[in-house]
Length: 243
Image (cartoon, rainbow, N blue to C red; front, side, top):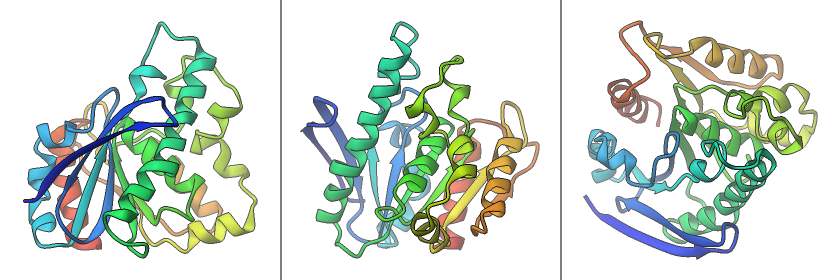
């Protein structure tokens, strides 16, 4: 499998940001790590190996980025307003820097599907809903889509506009809604085992249903807990059957 590590100094974040690229061809899978993890997390926990057949066959080309959650919502010493600002700066990094990088290393026409597990699932869904003109869909595994679950009660405009459970019910822009509706890759997945929250997935699906937006809600069994074996099963299955 072709594997390349790159980095650049991010104007949005004012720091060096690395990215791992796996594969040579295929739709672009933009992978967002869990919690406070880094860009090599999916490699360390064998998820890259689990989807290797699709990478090696040219079905997908993977772009795995760093989170900065430890500089925002996971940092208990940080002022909540500064966390909110930092979160928005990370969004800007994805939209203004990572997506052009992906297009340069694929093509202008290559679809980009954003994918994440746990906190990465919230990021993945949120990134798509905010910019469906840049992204083509998402695979969200074991997510909670209410950002206030991570803010310890803090709420401001940036929290609202990065919390799909809050802003999606009120989204009325016809153009954006039509762009979202044009995607047939809104995959909301959850287990039903320990530490999973399938009701969070159901709530997001209900919001989309009320907006007339196609989605796929897939709740796996009680043997599927909030842990790597679940995601190691889910992602290869979806790449193999939905793309």
